[in-house]
Length: 220
Image 1 (cartoon, rainbow, N blue to C red):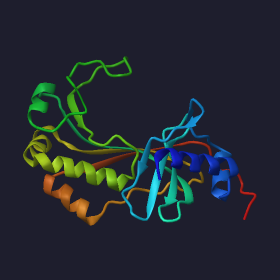
Image 2 (cartoon, helix red, strand yellow; image 1 turned 180 degrees about the vertical axis):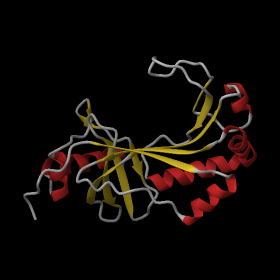
Image 3 (cartoon, rainbow, N blue to C red; image 1 turned 30 degrees about the vertical axis):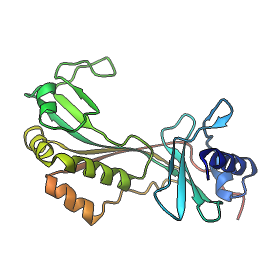
Image 4 (cartoon, rainbow, N blue to C red; image 1 turned 90 degrees about the vertical axis):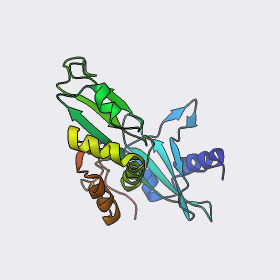
């Protein structure tokens, strides 16, 4: 199935609402269209049995997640996926931005010096810091964590050095749809816990909820 065929399939479901859950979501939120075409940020084909299309939600940070059976080519479910940011974060009040970056061979997503103006333009950083964020696309939390760890493991020496001298750790931020008050929570496998331990990494979570609550269902 091509990306264009997939977009047509999803648009048809959004118009006809054959699944009760489709109507439930579209009553409170809308997908994003560009030039009258449905915007799809990513199609996850990592599973042989099911693919997932991630669609941005208008005026929100979380995504619609549309699940398609790869055998039948039919949509089997629609839900939401939080907007996950999973990154390595290191800061220092004594080391400079250049010194922090020199500790690792990994690509740095963002960095700054102590005294630099923050993005809000109203304050300055009291510390130098860097973020390593190899995966910015929509994805499930566990997949993002696994991919980050795989990337960090390519420079174990550098990451360990940043952990020791700049208190490096994994930071997670999640924007979650608060549809019915049950937002769930992240799951970390034993394998990934062991991988973090080998690098000396701790992990911190910031959870944000947003969006409109579900309306009372009128269907079975």
